[in-house]
Length: 252
Ligand SMILES: NC(=O)c1ccc[n+]([C@@H]2O[C@H](COP(=O)([O-])OP(=O)(O)OC[C@H]3O[C@@H](n4cnc5c(N)ncnc54)[C@H](OP(=O)(O)O)[C@@H]3O)[C@@H](O)[C@H]2O)c1
Image (cartoon, rainbow, N blue to C red; front, side, top):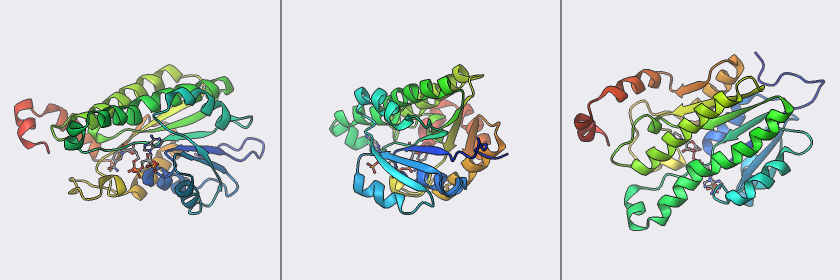
């Protein structure tokens, strides 16, 4: 199945929230959208957004977007949606602040919660309202295996991902039948900028592998969630069953 059904020759319009995200950019590269497709990279740093855009085989433009500036999200959604609408939105903004830093300055915990959860909710509510009115569109949400079970090493990050995962599932159900689809992506440890300096977890993967898995799930058309790598789906079931005292000892 094609990701973008040809609508009278109209080229797809795609938005990446967190426009410099390694995973988000790898998804865009793997999509294989037509060459003239319009991609909007939305983020905070214009220079790095422009540099990221040069790596993509599409018509790229950039737009200012700050995930923690929730008051701006309704207007932002209207601006990027524009008259042409959006066929695909990839919600990839995120930060991973080490727990000791959060404990030294608790305001960083609030920033991580706003970036990883609140900002996704406000932005996606505004965008999905416009997509629903148009009767079509796809939203990709970057959750994580961290959503499965909070770990003592990073309970705040885990909580933001669990909250985002729960929101995306309920939101997908609320949009069912509207023509707007939500694909929830749950990668494991992804080697890259966010995890730099950390010891890779078992089943570690790459942004390119996540990109390929998301593009494939979008092509298949039906999946509500995709785990990367796929065996993580089974691992997640096992992780939920580990007794808590044992989990406390073994989880890093
Ligand atoms: N890497 C992993 O192991 C892993 C595993 C599972 C899930 N995920 C999730 O996948 C998503 C993408 O991660 P990644 O590996 O691609 O990390 P990344 O390369 O560090 O990308 C994170 C993106 O979030 C943006 N961002 C951070 N704060 C923002 C803010 N206030 N407003 C707007 N954008 C903001 C960053 O923009 P700047 O360039 O301005 O900093 C960057 O574009 C995240 O949600 C992450 O939690 C990652």
